[in-house]
Length: 527
Ligand SMILES: Cc1cc2nc3c(=O)[nH]c(=O)nc-3n(C[C@H](O)[C@H](O)[C@H](O)COP(=O)(O)OP(=O)(O)OC[C@H]3O[C@@H](n4cnc5c(N)ncnc54)[C@H](O)[C@@H]3O)c2cc1C
View 1 (spheres, rainbow, N blue to C red):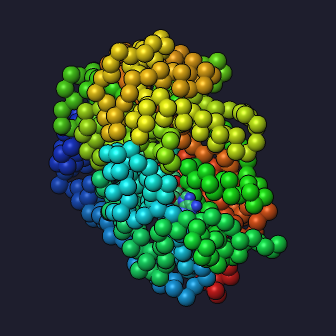
View 2 (cartoon, helix red, strand yellow):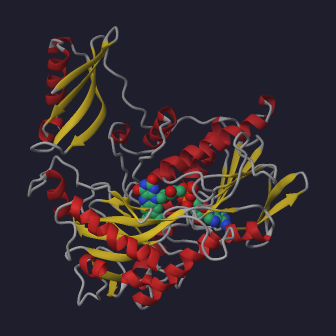
């Protein structure tokens, strides 16, 4: 099947469908696209794939490509080197709290707009952070400032690096993806329908961004936990750090992520308005990757030309959504606690996604007030579940596990299948670790998943507790126009922790947006 889309003066765009093997060959793509466009092969001077997705319907999986052909010149290659940033060392300072995607992209955009970012980050640089991740997986020891959520690159560094978002803002998304490519990501992310980077590649990319910020005269301070905001009647004056030092600024971006509970608490203690927000809670479910491949591609052997398959499901149970979340094909279930005495799971995968397991969060919406209904009640709800998971796991970072059918039928598993979760599992009643309104909906939801995906409902799959940090349980309010906190001038809540993003790309987009609003406050002469 081929579809000719548009003919500009010398560029023609066509949609073609090829076998996975042919789609991996530049020559096959050129030939098929030229044929579909009805252009003589010899007249084609440039070929570029602009969109690529897998179509697993029909008899065998096929690759759907949108290809552009040029008949007057080759296409320029994507930019794969960092941009030359102008020096901002003498420009007005913006303090950015948190070096996650929100904070980093805010910093890079500040530089482009003539402002000097000073990032203060409680964790360590990507390299040093790795040792603390090893302590979690090998010894079950969680450092409160350096873990899977805290440290350079934020929660996004040792993640799957999936770069999709539900946002429809194409231009903004493309800018973010192009920035990742400029700092070292594969240009494939510019064309793949489901782009991802992988844990092995992300640290280098993040470090290159930091180098770019430093070269331009910005500053990045690690081991700098913010413990207070300096607020006067006319607005923010800076931040205080855990060691008593202060960093002065009249513009502060607060991009501390969904796990910085101490930040939510300090805002509440300082009388700075925060609000309760809906979120979701559940478990990680892991199947053999070969099972997901067979289910999706309907073939026993995936072969070298197809990516490991994934699934995405949502069902309604008693008025609330039960849905799969942040699936990691060929990945590892990750221990993401940010304090001792709690178990929190998520997932990551390497760029090749070549581990033998496929894990996904499966979570239930947590809507409306819980507990005392106050702004921190969602945090407390999460905390109770995470502590219960810790107790059920029996200590360290050992997580409670249960076979999938046993989970749904409320039965302790006699033993557990091999699971990718590095600190290991203990057999436990994960269904009872969760509040009944969550556990029972998950049991029903997973049965419904099994009706939609043949073979899914199986005791070869394992349920790992708990997936509790799906998004922030708190929103830090801000003005829709200025993006400033309504009562603290110069304070800019940003990214996932403030409730304005739900992943790497949306946090990065929010960081850029905040930087643009801050720049708009300064007359161009000062920038
Ligand atoms: C294991 C894992 C896998 C994930 N996989 C994906 C994925 O594949 N795709 C995707 O889109 N999303 C994924 N996510 C979610 C994604 O990482 C987040 O949505 C994103 O990082 C949010 O960006 P952010 O900048 O708002 O906050 P964060 O990335 O959370 O960054 C906040 C930063 O603030 C710092 N900080 C916190 N408190 C303070 C303080 N008091 N003082 C100074 N610094 C502070 C933290 O150390 C952290 O570095 C994953 C998350 C995890 C944990």
